[in-house]
Every structure is written in structure tokens, then in C-alpha cells.
Image (tube, rainbow, N blue to C red; front, side, top):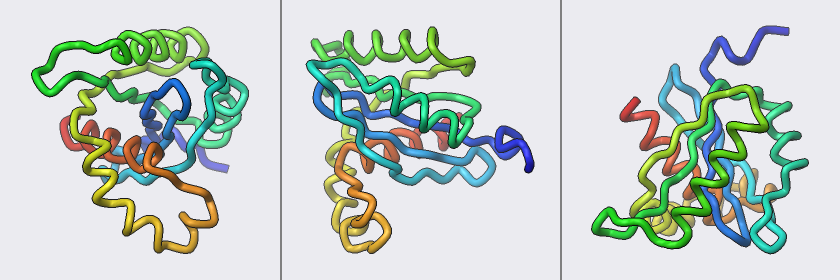
Length: 144
């Protein structure tokens, strides 16, 4: 079996206190797609599920959305997303990057119809958060 890291697999997160969207991307093709939505319990991520997804995909980097206000200033969720990124860095042997996620949810809502009607995504229970994670990851890939 070939090493998946050689093809540049990256994993993106749209952090939230109730749901965390997860997306998978590929550096070689600069593509990203929504993967799943994880439930959080009282703001605590489901680390076992994150570990399972990490072990399945073996990404070479994590990209976490940085939720800023429209003017670029921080908001309360910004601090929580930064803490999530720090925890990822402590728990996994891959670099963690943060990427401005302003307007990602709006773009995800525009793309929701596309994913909602795709049979595979509908059966996989893909939600706005996962689509937003894909938007964040795609934006990061285009700028990296």
C-alpha cells in the first residue's frame, strides 16, 4: 500500500462548540470535499472520532478555520478555535495551520444544494459545517 502522505492529503476543520465540520483535500490537485460533521459535547471535540479520521486519511497537515468578524477582529469563538488548533498540534504529529474563514458558511450555504442532491453526500449525512470545512480548506489550498 502506498503512503498517502506522498500525494499531499490535507484535512480541514470548521470548528464550532456543537458541531465540527471536517473536509479532506489534496495539495496536488488543490481540491477539497466535505467529509463529515462531528458532534461536540459541551464544546469538547470528539477526539476519538478525530483520531479515527486521522488514522484513516493520514493527512500531512491540518487546517483550522479562524472565525473572525467581518472587520478582521476576534470574537469569542476565535479563542476556542485557536485552543482547538493547539490541541490538534499537541495530539497529532502534523503541522496545524489556521486560515481565515470569513464568509465560508455563507459560501457553504450557497453550495449546500449541490451537495444535498448528491446521493453519496446525502447518505453520508454531510451538513453545512462539513461543506464550510471544504470551503476553508479549498481557500487555504489556493493560497498555499
